[in-house]
Picture 1 (cartoon, each protein chain N blue to C red):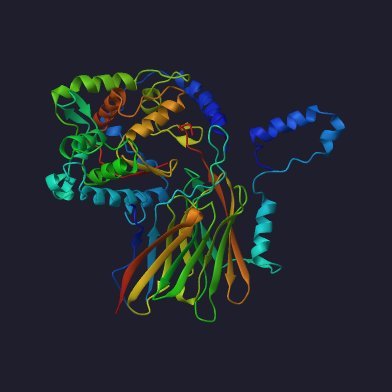
Picture 2 (cartoon, rainbow over the protein chains, first blue to last red):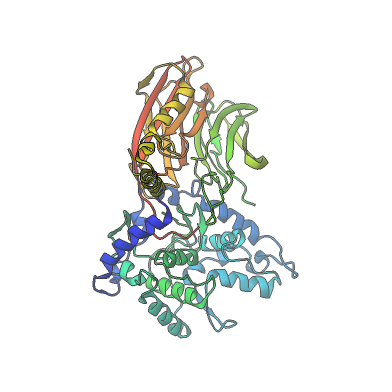
Length: 262
Length: 106
Length: 156
């Protein structure tokens, strides 16, 4: 396999060529599409069939954790939320949401950790830990098939705008923005790979590159590394604002959690 | 955590060939990767997977590092009588995992 | 021969810079599997027997989005009776660090000589499946797979 440095050099040359294109703007609502449609036949089959989707391993773990008593309060998620297939239906499709405790948006991972510390008196799970991914996958799975529906909440407006500004801001040694690839050049090829629109329709995803389940923030950090920029830390407000903006940008598209992506 | 995912049909007719799907969580570290400081990451893979039907082995695989992480197998066997399918995975560093599934043959 | 790794190129340039005569006698040993190593690995399994083409159907996507997880399905045309069945299916590759992928052992109780799994391909290359029959014959099929690499990866 080509070393990472060699690959980034190829990417850099190609990106410089794309960068000279004009900044076109938002994708028209009716042209938005999920990355699922660009998958090969076998990857689509992997996502569509729970019995062969590796993400199911995490969903199973999530179900076990949901029912497991935890923390000083010795309480399970199920003790307050009962049957997740009922109570969690529609939740992932409207996250990130506004948190009064944080006076700002929180994503699903942060919401789960807030529950752990406030209601279970338990230690929050680390980002990208097996437990947190499992719970996020299990909760997210309950919204599969539903339309992404960001909350109609005025308090979120300034944060969506902050996320949008991050999306169009050039970063890194490559000095490009998310929008230049994902708004202006989606559908074209970058070093042999198809550029998607970057609609987060299936997070947490089983990414073939990671050979593991991972969150949207992990993917955003990969993108920033790809641009030779310093990625924001997990849980940083910039990452949450970007997530919020991206989910708003994907409003109305169907949630596929947990999806498979290359 | 992460018990194996096994998929077999609930009921089969005697003599029918049926499909078995298995998926487990395992990193399948190849032993060919290096850290940023140049140290080799040691190999850590599942080396053997086997399935027995009422005690008789019906499928066995010898895995090499080229098998993907979270090893998946889809294979077939003939329904003889009702009973138990036993699955076993063994690998590096003493890795051992088992699972069972009941099969009803009518 | 395939693309040279950057390391090999630098090594070649350095060695070329040494006393010219010496450089000509130094042989650069490839660290990875090659078509020769794949053939040697196949011989280890098959011995001196001849390998016939046919009866084996090797299903791999012709173009793969990520070499980490490539779907593989191998099926063999066989009645799978007590006297005429597939004993084993062996899968090989030519450019990964090792030539073996997997060896699957079957028998009459399989009913159908078919299995699926997912495997890794380090580069675009040829994949070969060899079926070992109960009558001692060997049959094979090969497929050429193009592997694209993911853009935007994280530093290890």
